[in-house]
Amino acid sequence: MQVVFKHRHGARFKTAAHVRKIATCNRPPLFLGLWRQTSERNMKAMLDTATSGGGPGYIRYPDYDVSMQPFVGRIRVHIGETQLAESTSAILLTETDHSPVYYLPRADVRFDLLEALDDTTYCPFKGHATYWRVAGKGADHGKAVLWAYTSPFDEVSGLSEYVAFYSDRVRLEVV
Image 1 (cartoon, rainbow, N blue to C red):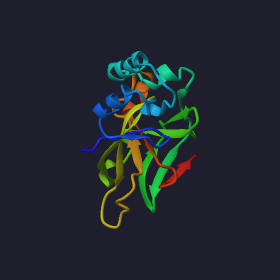
Image 2: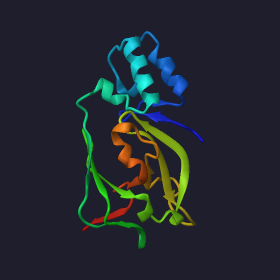
Image 3: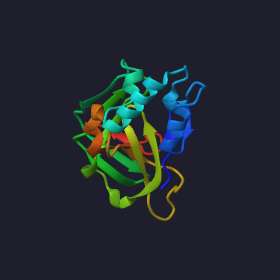
Image 4: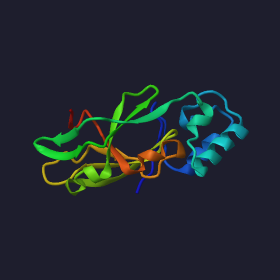
């Protein structure tokens, strides 16, 4: 399994050791998109938080907002004519600088039609994400259609039993 730490501006790190190495070098660190010089003490605090359950992004950006609200309505997810999920228990996640995203309970998703991918990514506010793609012959095997934070940071611990679909790769019906 390959673990890739990825920031939304494109910075990529292959291992936690690589992140720590970058965090202690003399040039401005790229860790988590921190483009200005950060003291070693502050970086250590962020790394300690990352391993203690809290999102390290909140230390650097305390006003960053990730909020979850129950969604009242029904959501159906299709790929072609195949229904991948249907839920009346979704939550709507809103996040600073991002479009709103519907997260559906894992129990409402047809995982028998999906296969897990080995790659993961990292968000300094939510944690490590894992991905799934549509399984079977004729499916587009190159693209993930679904992601989840199985062990999210404490601030968004409610995401642990939910998944989200890429709205540009599936047909998402909100009723």
